[in-house]
Image (cartoon, rainbow, N blue to C red; front, side, top):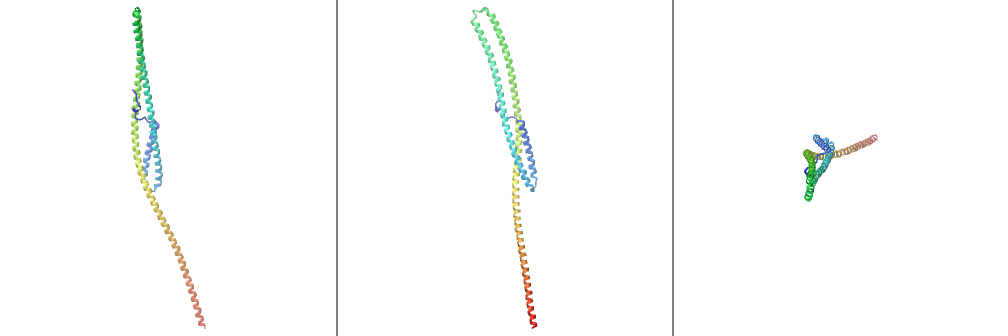
Amino acid sequence: MLYTAHDTNAAPFPPSVLQRLDLFKQLLVSTKWLTLEKLTRSAHDEECKKLELTKVVEREKKARAEVENVKISLDKAKRERVTEISAKNEVIRKLKDELKDIKQSAEDVARKLEQRTKAKEEGEHTQFSEREIVLQTEIKALQAQLATQLAAHKEEELALRKRKFKVESEVDAWIQKYDQDMDEKQSELDDITAIYTEEKAQLDDLQQRYEELERESKRLQDERQRMEAIRAMQEAERQRKARCATLIQAAWRGFRIRKALKEQKEKKKKGGKSGKKKKK
C-alpha cells in the first residue's frame, strides 16, 4: 500500500515552532493587559500612552513576524513529511519488486526443471528405459530441492510480508499521530487567531481614541497658546497705557509746577509795582 503527499494535510510542529507559538501567546496576553491598563489611565498620561502605544505597535510587528516564521516552519515540515512518505513508498515498492523477482525466479526454476525432465524423458525413453528408476530418483531429488527452495522462498516471502505489514502499520500510526497533532495545532492556531483579532480590534479602538484625545489635546494647546498670546497682548497694552499715564502725569505735574512758578512771578511783579507807587 502506497501513500502519496496528498494523504496528509500538514506536518507536525518541531519544538522550535512550539516555543515560538508559546512566545507569541505570551506576547498577546501581555498586549491584552497593557491595553486594559492603558484604558484606565487619565488624560494627563497621554505622552506615556503614546510611548506605550509605539511599543505595542512594535510588539505587534514582532508578533506578525513570528506568525510568518511559524508559517514558514509549517511549510518546511510539510515538505519534509512529503519527502519522508515518498521514501517509505520507495522502500515498499522495492520490497514488492524483490518479492515479485523471487516468485518469478522460483517459477522459472520449476518450469525449467520440468521442461528439462520432460525433454529427457521423451527423448531418451526408448534408449534409456533401464535408467527410468535413476531418472525418477533424480526427479524426486530435484523436486525435493525445488520444494526446499520453495519453502525457503516462502519463508523469505513471509518475512517480507511481515516487514511490509510492519512498515505499513508504522506509516499508518505516523499518519494518525500527524493528523491528531495537526488538529490540535490547528485548533490552537484558531484560538490564537481569534485572540489576535480581538486584541487587534481593541488596539484599533484604542488608536482611534488616542487620535481623538490627541486632536483634543492639540486643540486645547492651540487655545492655551491663543489665550497666552491674548494675555501677552493685554499685558503689553497695560504696560503701554501705564507708560502713557506716567508720561501724562509727569507732563501734568510739570505743567502745574510751571504754572505755579509763573503765577508766583506775576504776583511778585505786581507786588513790586504797588510798593513803588506807595513810595511815590
